[in-house]
Image (cartoon, rainbow, N blue to C red; front, top):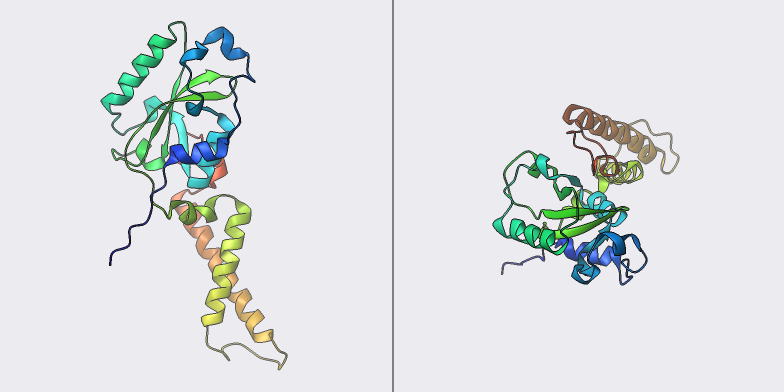
Length: 215
């Protein structure tokens, strides 16, 4: 029987990060620039909330003009409605999506935001397919330096446990051979990751989420 795994909806993840707190009433800035009655609090997010999702799922948050995917008609319709509701508003548009969507035409859960100032963004439209259930897990090692070192250590331990005994010098002390083998494997795995990282220009999620450059 085929097992269907749930998909990850980025909008729902944003709402989880945001929690139940209301941010409109705490920011009188909006009272002077926007029609508050036309603002849906469930679509209003702070840049730190967006940043967390981008880091967790290895996404980019960049200007619309850098986006190479197709923006659906519905997104533009929502944008026009947003402009009509706030006629005196001047804003920039940004999209949160996987890096490949800023290079290739493909669909993978992009979200279009309008900047409202003071670090806040309003969600205009979400489209495309939801992210893979495994994406957060698969990009976890690249989140930061601590994560990658932890991942390398775990991988090295697993490989060491699978290596047959008596391939290195053994002095009779319990655990000595395992430790020596582990150090050898660890050094090799680190070398592989360093080569992979430099050759492909990879960087940690926390450093690339709002960078318009490849690495």
